[in-house]
Structures are given as structure tokens and as C-alpha cells.
Amino acid sequence: MDLLSRIAAELDCVQLVHEYANRLDAYDHDGFMQLWAEDGVLAMLGTEHRGPAAIRRWLEGREQGMICRHLVTNTVIRPETESSASGSCYTLAFRAGQAADSPPGALVNPTFLVSYRDRFMRDGERGWLLARREVVADLVGPDQMRALLLGARATAS
Image (cartoon, helix red, strand yellow):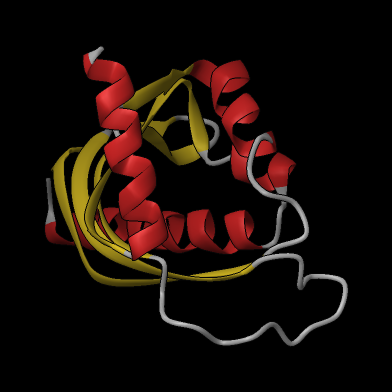
């Protein structure tokens, strides 16, 4: 892969990472779904959502009426071939429940910091897409920690 192709792949994939956060925060479900490969997988905190229908179900199951802002940082993209790349980043999320109809929402401590581990693929017509995104919780707030612990207990039983 020549230098120009590598740089273009890196920039396209960084843009994809940012579009994921922006479209998720905007509740732009159709735009969000355009970011995914046909057989894409969203592995959200240990639960895999395979393919467009499953990813959309997860997306539509998110809390409505919330202001959410994902701040993405430390993005690293590693082009591997002309049509595949891997990447990682950290994301810090701020949420204000039931505030979308009357912004601004109350600013409180972030609810979580996650790591995204990504696989990208390049489609000849659609360009770079998410093939797989694994979301791993690194730090969570007390409410999220309780939910994670309860979920782990339920899975173990």
C-alpha cells in the first residue's frame, strides 16, 4: 500500500469513527446504519448484534429523549490492505436523560469511558465501512457499575 493510499484510508476511517458518534448522538438511525457493512457486527459490552436488523434493534432500543454526546479521542487507524484496516479509540459519554425537548441538559459526570476496537472494510461503491466494532467498558459510573454487576450475575446463573 503506497503512502497516499495509507493516508487516505486513515483519514476515511477516522471520519467514520467520528460519524458514528455524531449520528448516534443525533438519533440519526438511517445515517448510522449507512456506516455499516452488510454483515457488520456491533459487540456492545459483551453482546453481539450481527447484521443490519440486529444493529438497528439495538439502536432503536436506546433511551429516547436523551441528550448524549460522545467525545472520541486517541484514535489510531492501522490500514492493512487496500480494503481492510483496524483501529481503536477511547470514548467518553455525557448524558442528560429526558433533556432533548428542553436543552440544555444538566451537565453531570460522564457515565462511562469505553474503548472501541474496530475492523473496517472498504466497499467498492460505498467506501470505508464498519465491519466490526467491539465496545469495552473501561470506566463506568456507579449506576452503570451496578447494572454491569447485575448483568454479570444474571449471565452466571
